Image (cartoon, rainbow, N blue to C red):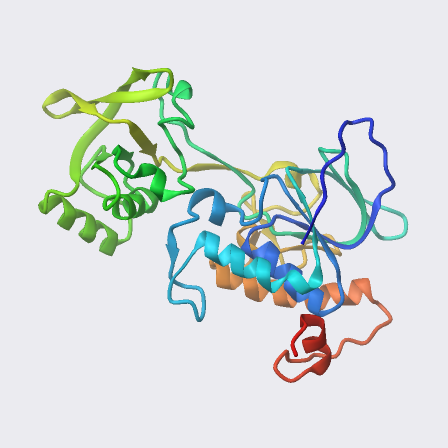
Amino acid sequence: MNTKSPPDSANDVSEPIDADAVIVGAGPCGLFAVFELGLLDIKAHVVDILDRPGGQCTELYPEKPIYDVPALPTVTGQELTDRLMEQIKPFSPTFHFNERIDGLKREADGRFRVTTDAGTEFLTKTVVIAAGGGSFTPKRPPLDGIEAYEGKSVFYSIRKMETMRGRDVVIVGGGDSALDWTLNLQPLAKSLTLIHRRDEFRAAPHSVEKMRKLVQEGNVRLMIGQVTSLEGEDGQLSALNVKTANGVEKLPANAMLPFFGLTMKLGPVADWGLNLRENLVPVDTERFETSEKGIFAIGDINWYPGKLKLILSGFHEAALMAQAAHHIVYPDKKLMFQYTTSSSSLQKKLGVK
Protein backbone atom coordinates (compact mmCIF):
# COMPACT_ATOMS: atom_id res chain seq x y z
CA MET A 1 0.00 0.00 0.00
CA ASN A 2 1.25 3.46 -0.85
CA THR A 3 0.09 6.36 1.29
CA LYS A 4 0.63 9.89 0.05
CA SER A 5 0.78 12.75 2.51
CA PRO A 6 -1.12 15.89 1.52
CA PRO A 7 0.90 18.99 0.64
CA ASP A 8 2.29 20.91 3.61
CA SER A 9 0.52 24.09 2.55
CA ALA A 10 -1.78 25.55 -0.03
CA ASN A 11 1.32 27.05 -1.68
CA ASP A 12 2.77 23.62 -2.40
CA VAL A 13 2.38 23.42 -6.18
CA SER A 14 3.04 20.13 -7.92
CA GLU A 15 2.23 18.58 -11.26
CA PRO A 16 -1.14 16.79 -11.53
CA ILE A 17 -0.96 13.05 -10.90
CA ASP A 18 -1.58 11.09 -14.09
CA ALA A 19 -4.06 8.35 -13.16
CA ASP A 20 -6.13 5.63 -14.78
CA ALA A 21 -8.72 5.66 -12.02
CA VAL A 22 -9.48 7.78 -8.96
CA ILE A 23 -11.69 6.06 -6.40
CA VAL A 24 -13.61 8.33 -4.03
CA GLY A 25 -14.00 6.41 -0.77
CA ALA A 26 -11.92 3.71 0.93
CA GLY A 27 -14.77 1.65 2.35
CA PRO A 28 -15.25 -2.04 1.46
CA CYS A 29 -16.67 -1.27 -2.01
CA GLY A 30 -13.88 1.17 -2.82
CA LEU A 31 -11.26 -1.34 -1.69
CA PHE A 32 -12.76 -4.17 -3.72
CA ALA A 33 -12.88 -1.84 -6.72
CA VAL A 34 -9.08 -1.57 -6.40
CA PHE A 35 -8.92 -5.36 -6.75
CA GLU A 36 -11.24 -5.63 -9.75
CA LEU A 37 -9.51 -2.76 -11.55
CA GLY A 38 -6.11 -4.20 -10.73
CA LEU A 39 -6.96 -7.50 -12.39
CA LEU A 40 -7.44 -5.48 -15.58
CA ASP A 41 -4.15 -3.54 -15.24
CA ILE A 42 -5.87 -0.36 -14.07
CA LYS A 43 -3.95 1.25 -11.22
CA ALA A 44 -6.05 3.16 -8.72
CA HIS A 45 -5.59 6.19 -6.51
CA VAL A 46 -7.98 6.16 -3.54
CA VAL A 47 -9.09 9.36 -1.80
CA ASP A 48 -10.85 9.35 1.57
CA ILE A 49 -11.69 12.08 4.05
CA LEU A 50 -10.95 9.71 6.96
CA ASP A 51 -7.43 8.93 8.19
CA ARG A 52 -7.52 5.19 7.41
CA PRO A 53 -9.30 2.67 5.18
CA GLY A 54 -12.61 1.02 6.01
CA GLY A 55 -15.17 3.82 5.76
CA GLN A 56 -18.24 3.37 7.91
CA CYS A 57 -17.22 -0.22 8.73
CA THR A 58 -14.22 0.91 10.77
CA GLU A 59 -15.56 4.32 11.80
CA LEU A 60 -18.90 3.18 13.23
CA TYR A 61 -18.71 -0.54 13.98
CA PRO A 62 -15.15 -1.91 13.76
CA GLU A 63 -15.92 -4.68 16.27
CA LYS A 64 -19.55 -5.26 15.34
CA PRO A 65 -20.09 -8.60 13.60
CA ILE A 66 -21.34 -8.69 10.00
CA TYR A 67 -23.15 -11.88 9.02
CA ASP A 68 -23.97 -11.55 5.30
CA VAL A 69 -20.56 -11.46 3.59
CA PRO A 70 -20.32 -14.60 1.41
CA ALA A 71 -18.14 -17.42 2.80
CA LEU A 72 -17.56 -15.53 6.08
CA PRO A 73 -20.19 -16.64 8.62
CA THR A 74 -19.17 -13.72 10.80
CA VAL A 75 -16.65 -10.94 10.32
CA THR A 76 -16.21 -7.58 12.02
CA GLY A 77 -15.93 -4.32 10.12
CA GLN A 78 -12.23 -4.09 10.95
CA GLU A 79 -11.53 -7.70 10.00
CA LEU A 80 -13.27 -7.25 6.66
CA THR A 81 -11.22 -4.13 5.98
CA ASP A 82 -7.99 -5.92 6.93
CA ARG A 83 -8.81 -8.83 4.60
CA LEU A 84 -9.58 -6.47 1.72
CA MET A 85 -6.33 -4.57 2.31
CA GLU A 86 -4.43 -7.85 2.17
CA GLN A 87 -6.25 -8.84 -1.03
CA ILE A 88 -5.31 -5.64 -2.88
CA LYS A 89 -1.62 -5.62 -1.89
CA PRO A 90 -0.46 -6.99 -5.27
CA PHE A 91 -1.86 -3.91 -7.02
CA SER A 92 -0.09 -1.30 -4.84
CA PRO A 93 -2.83 1.35 -4.78
CA THR A 94 -1.95 4.83 -3.60
CA PHE A 95 -4.09 6.15 -0.75
CA HIS A 96 -4.71 9.84 -0.11
CA PHE A 97 -6.18 9.97 3.40
CA ASN A 98 -7.51 13.06 5.19
CA GLU A 99 -8.46 14.54 1.82
CA ARG A 100 -11.81 15.39 0.29
CA ILE A 101 -12.54 15.66 -3.42
CA ASP A 102 -13.59 19.26 -3.95
CA GLY A 103 -13.39 19.82 -7.71
CA LEU A 104 -14.04 17.84 -10.85
CA LYS A 105 -14.16 18.98 -14.46
CA ARG A 106 -13.67 17.35 -17.83
CA GLU A 107 -10.66 18.38 -19.88
CA ALA A 108 -10.57 18.77 -23.67
CA ASP A 109 -8.84 15.38 -24.04
CA GLY A 110 -11.71 13.61 -22.23
CA ARG A 111 -9.91 13.09 -18.94
CA PHE A 112 -11.11 14.51 -15.63
CA ARG A 113 -9.20 17.06 -13.59
CA VAL A 114 -9.89 16.14 -9.98
CA THR A 115 -8.73 18.28 -7.06
CA THR A 116 -8.82 17.78 -3.30
CA ASP A 117 -9.09 20.21 -0.43
CA ALA A 118 -5.43 19.47 0.37
CA GLY A 119 -4.27 20.68 -3.05
CA THR A 120 -3.71 17.26 -4.63
CA GLU A 121 -4.64 17.24 -8.31
CA PHE A 122 -5.25 14.33 -10.65
CA LEU A 123 -5.71 13.95 -14.37
CA THR A 124 -7.63 10.72 -14.59
CA LYS A 125 -9.40 8.72 -17.27
CA THR A 126 -12.09 7.43 -14.92
CA VAL A 127 -13.63 8.33 -11.56
CA VAL A 128 -15.31 5.79 -9.28
CA ILE A 129 -17.60 7.19 -6.58
CA ALA A 130 -17.66 4.69 -3.71
CA ALA A 131 -18.44 7.15 -0.96
CA GLY A 132 -21.16 5.20 0.86
CA GLY A 133 -23.94 7.61 1.72
CA GLY A 134 -21.57 10.54 1.51
CA SER A 135 -19.96 12.14 4.52
CA PHE A 136 -21.77 11.24 7.71
CA THR A 137 -22.21 12.99 11.05
CA PRO A 138 -23.87 11.45 14.10
CA LYS A 139 -26.98 13.29 15.23
CA ARG A 140 -26.23 15.07 18.51
CA PRO A 141 -28.82 14.82 21.30
CA PRO A 142 -30.35 18.22 22.20
CA LEU A 143 -28.62 18.42 25.59
CA ASP A 144 -26.98 21.58 26.93
CA GLY A 145 -23.22 21.31 27.22
CA ILE A 146 -22.90 17.88 25.62
CA GLU A 147 -20.01 19.09 23.46
CA ALA A 148 -17.72 19.22 26.51
CA TYR A 149 -18.19 15.48 27.10
CA GLU A 150 -17.83 14.27 23.52
CA GLY A 151 -14.83 12.01 22.97
CA LYS A 152 -14.22 11.71 26.73
CA SER A 153 -17.36 10.16 28.17
CA VAL A 154 -19.94 10.63 25.40
CA PHE A 155 -19.24 8.53 22.30
CA TYR A 156 -21.07 8.23 18.99
CA SER A 157 -19.06 5.19 17.93
CA ILE A 158 -16.84 2.62 19.63
CA ARG A 159 -13.56 1.58 18.03
CA LYS A 160 -12.41 -0.64 20.89
CA MET A 161 -15.02 -2.35 23.03
CA GLU A 162 -12.42 -2.91 25.73
CA THR A 163 -12.55 0.81 26.58
CA MET A 164 -16.01 0.19 28.07
CA ARG A 165 -14.87 -2.56 30.42
CA GLY A 166 -15.80 -1.88 34.03
CA ARG A 167 -17.73 1.30 33.27
CA ASP A 168 -21.30 2.33 34.05
CA VAL A 169 -22.55 2.55 30.49
CA VAL A 170 -25.77 4.17 29.30
CA ILE A 171 -26.95 3.59 25.73
CA VAL A 172 -29.66 5.87 24.36
CA GLY A 173 -31.74 4.89 21.33
CA GLY A 174 -34.07 2.27 19.94
CA GLY A 175 -32.59 1.23 16.60
CA ASP A 176 -30.19 -1.47 15.47
CA SER A 177 -27.06 0.36 16.62
CA ALA A 178 -28.41 0.89 20.14
CA LEU A 179 -29.52 -2.71 20.49
CA ASP A 180 -26.38 -4.19 18.92
CA TRP A 181 -24.10 -2.25 21.26
CA THR A 182 -26.29 -3.16 24.23
CA LEU A 183 -25.75 -6.83 23.46
CA ASN A 184 -22.05 -6.45 22.67
CA LEU A 185 -21.07 -4.29 25.63
CA GLN A 186 -23.17 -5.90 28.37
CA PRO A 187 -20.54 -8.58 29.16
CA LEU A 188 -17.84 -5.90 29.56
CA ALA A 189 -19.65 -3.11 31.38
CA LYS A 190 -19.91 -2.83 35.16
CA SER A 191 -23.53 -1.85 34.56
CA LEU A 192 -25.49 -1.17 31.40
CA THR A 193 -28.68 0.82 31.02
CA LEU A 194 -30.66 1.17 27.80
CA ILE A 195 -32.84 4.29 27.57
CA HIS A 196 -35.54 4.74 24.93
CA ARG A 197 -38.48 7.10 24.82
CA ARG A 198 -40.97 4.26 24.36
CA ASP A 199 -41.15 0.52 24.91
CA GLU A 200 -41.06 -0.22 21.20
CA PHE A 201 -37.91 -0.67 19.15
CA ARG A 202 -36.95 -0.31 15.49
CA ALA A 203 -34.20 -2.93 15.73
CA ALA A 204 -34.13 -6.50 14.42
CA PRO A 205 -36.64 -8.65 16.35
CA HIS A 206 -34.02 -11.17 17.49
CA SER A 207 -31.91 -8.34 18.96
CA VAL A 208 -34.91 -6.99 20.86
CA GLU A 209 -35.67 -10.50 22.14
CA LYS A 210 -32.09 -10.94 23.41
CA MET A 211 -32.16 -7.52 25.07
CA ARG A 212 -35.42 -8.26 26.88
CA LYS A 213 -33.99 -11.56 28.13
CA LEU A 214 -30.99 -9.71 29.58
CA VAL A 215 -33.40 -7.27 31.25
CA GLN A 216 -35.39 -10.14 32.77
CA GLU A 217 -32.18 -11.71 34.06
CA GLY A 218 -31.15 -8.41 35.66
CA ASN A 219 -28.09 -7.95 33.46
CA VAL A 220 -29.42 -4.87 31.64
CA ARG A 221 -31.65 -2.10 32.93
CA LEU A 222 -34.28 -0.77 30.52
CA MET A 223 -35.58 2.75 31.20
CA ILE A 224 -38.47 4.23 29.25
CA GLY A 225 -37.87 7.97 29.18
CA GLN A 226 -35.63 10.74 27.90
CA VAL A 227 -32.30 12.15 29.05
CA THR A 228 -32.85 15.78 30.04
CA SER A 229 -29.41 16.86 31.29
CA LEU A 230 -25.87 15.71 32.04
CA GLU A 231 -23.79 16.05 35.19
CA GLY A 232 -20.03 15.90 35.51
CA GLU A 233 -16.78 17.87 35.40
CA ASP A 234 -13.92 18.31 32.93
CA GLY A 235 -15.65 16.24 30.28
CA GLN A 236 -16.26 13.25 32.53
CA LEU A 237 -19.85 12.24 33.19
CA SER A 238 -20.96 11.33 36.67
CA ALA A 239 -24.73 11.10 36.16
CA LEU A 240 -27.64 11.63 33.79
CA ASN A 241 -31.02 13.07 34.63
CA VAL A 242 -33.75 10.99 33.00
CA LYS A 243 -37.39 12.01 32.74
CA THR A 244 -39.68 9.00 33.08
CA ALA A 245 -43.39 8.50 33.72
CA ASN A 246 -42.60 8.65 37.46
CA GLY A 247 -40.65 11.91 37.33
CA VAL A 248 -36.97 12.77 36.93
CA GLU A 249 -34.46 10.14 38.06
CA LYS A 250 -30.72 10.63 38.51
CA LEU A 251 -28.81 7.77 36.90
CA PRO A 252 -25.10 7.30 37.77
CA ALA A 253 -23.05 6.91 34.58
CA ASN A 254 -19.52 7.51 33.35
CA ALA A 255 -20.07 6.65 29.68
CA MET A 256 -23.00 7.50 27.41
CA LEU A 257 -23.53 6.25 23.86
CA PRO A 258 -26.34 8.10 22.07
CA PHE A 259 -27.52 6.48 18.84
CA PHE A 260 -29.94 8.92 17.24
CA GLY A 261 -28.95 8.12 13.67
CA LEU A 262 -26.69 9.83 11.16
CA THR A 263 -26.97 12.98 9.12
CA MET A 264 -25.73 12.09 5.64
CA LYS A 265 -24.34 14.76 3.35
CA LEU A 266 -23.51 14.08 -0.27
CA GLY A 267 -20.94 16.87 -0.20
CA PRO A 268 -19.16 18.14 -3.34
CA VAL A 269 -20.47 15.18 -5.39
CA ALA A 270 -23.77 17.07 -5.51
CA ASP A 271 -22.08 19.75 -7.61
CA TRP A 272 -20.59 17.45 -10.24
CA GLY A 273 -23.44 17.81 -12.72
CA LEU A 274 -24.77 14.28 -12.20
CA ASN A 275 -28.49 13.54 -12.41
CA LEU A 276 -29.22 12.94 -8.73
CA ARG A 277 -32.22 11.13 -7.29
CA GLU A 278 -32.92 12.01 -3.66
CA ASN A 279 -29.22 12.57 -2.97
CA LEU A 280 -28.26 9.29 -4.62
CA VAL A 281 -26.49 8.79 -7.95
CA PRO A 282 -28.51 6.89 -10.58
CA VAL A 283 -26.52 4.37 -12.61
CA ASP A 284 -27.19 1.78 -15.28
CA THR A 285 -26.91 -1.85 -14.22
CA GLU A 286 -24.67 -2.93 -17.10
CA ARG A 287 -21.73 -0.61 -16.41
CA PHE A 288 -22.70 1.19 -13.16
CA GLU A 289 -21.89 4.37 -15.00
CA THR A 290 -23.54 7.66 -14.08
CA SER A 291 -25.08 10.18 -16.47
CA GLU A 292 -21.51 11.35 -17.13
CA LYS A 293 -19.41 8.97 -19.23
CA GLY A 294 -16.32 7.85 -17.33
CA ILE A 295 -17.79 8.53 -13.88
CA PHE A 296 -19.04 5.41 -12.12
CA ALA A 297 -20.84 4.97 -8.79
CA ILE A 298 -20.88 1.79 -6.71
CA GLY A 299 -22.10 0.91 -3.22
CA ASP A 300 -24.62 2.73 -1.07
CA ILE A 301 -24.26 6.03 -2.93
CA ASN A 302 -25.82 4.75 -6.16
CA TRP A 303 -29.39 4.00 -7.13
CA TYR A 304 -31.10 1.76 -9.66
CA PRO A 305 -34.39 -0.18 -9.64
CA GLY A 306 -34.18 -2.99 -7.11
CA LYS A 307 -31.09 -1.60 -5.39
CA LEU A 308 -30.14 -3.33 -2.13
CA LYS A 309 -27.74 -1.51 0.18
CA LEU A 310 -25.56 -4.52 0.95
CA ILE A 311 -21.79 -4.89 0.87
CA LEU A 312 -22.12 -7.92 -1.40
CA SER A 313 -24.16 -5.83 -3.87
CA GLY A 314 -21.35 -3.27 -3.96
CA PHE A 315 -18.81 -6.02 -4.70
CA HIS A 316 -20.88 -7.15 -7.69
CA GLU A 317 -21.16 -3.56 -8.89
CA ALA A 318 -17.38 -3.10 -8.62
CA ALA A 319 -16.76 -6.10 -10.87
CA LEU A 320 -19.01 -4.83 -13.67
CA MET A 321 -17.71 -1.28 -13.27
CA ALA A 322 -14.14 -2.46 -13.80
CA GLN A 323 -15.06 -4.21 -17.04
CA ALA A 324 -16.60 -0.99 -18.34
CA ALA A 325 -13.70 1.15 -17.13
CA HIS A 326 -11.26 -1.02 -19.09
CA HIS A 327 -12.83 0.11 -22.37
CA ILE A 328 -12.17 3.73 -21.41
CA VAL A 329 -8.65 3.27 -20.06
CA TYR A 330 -7.59 0.94 -22.90
CA PRO A 331 -9.90 1.83 -25.82
CA ASP A 332 -7.76 -0.06 -28.36
CA LYS A 333 -7.20 -3.16 -26.26
CA LYS A 334 -9.56 -6.11 -26.49
CA LEU A 335 -10.79 -7.31 -23.12
CA MET A 336 -10.61 -11.05 -22.60
CA PHE A 337 -12.74 -12.29 -19.72
CA GLN A 338 -10.73 -14.62 -17.48
CA TYR A 339 -11.17 -16.54 -14.23
CA THR A 340 -8.62 -16.21 -11.44
CA THR A 341 -8.90 -19.97 -10.86
CA SER A 342 -7.58 -20.85 -14.32
CA SER A 343 -5.80 -17.80 -15.76
CA SER A 344 -2.03 -17.96 -15.34
CA SER A 345 -1.73 -14.26 -16.22
CA LEU A 346 -4.17 -13.24 -13.47
CA GLN A 347 -2.46 -15.54 -10.98
CA LYS A 348 0.87 -13.93 -11.89
CA LYS A 349 -0.57 -10.49 -11.10
CA LEU A 350 -1.79 -11.83 -7.76
CA GLY A 351 1.59 -13.38 -6.97
CA VAL A 352 0.10 -16.89 -6.81
CA LYS A 353 2.75 -19.59 -7.08
